[in-house]
Length: 61
Image 1 (tube, rainbow, N blue to C red):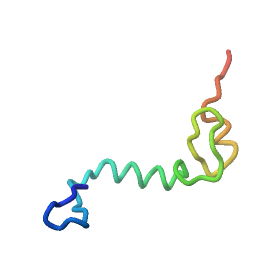
Image 2 (cartoon, helix red, strand yellow):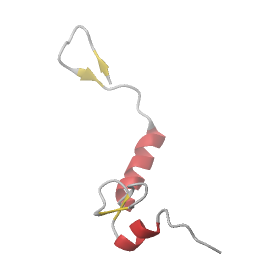
Image 3 (cartoon, rainbow, N blue to C red):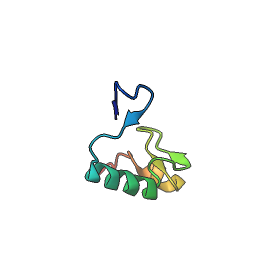
């Protein structure tokens, strides 16, 4: 977003980044942005508590 000096109060939309918007839409669909449950380690959001708990789990052999 760029602020135009002539317009003063309005922001002008910059370059459209297709990959960013595609990844953002996928993250929203997966619940990683607005999910109800958060990973206790990294804070990534999920729709289910199990996925949030398994996000950064260390698996010992």
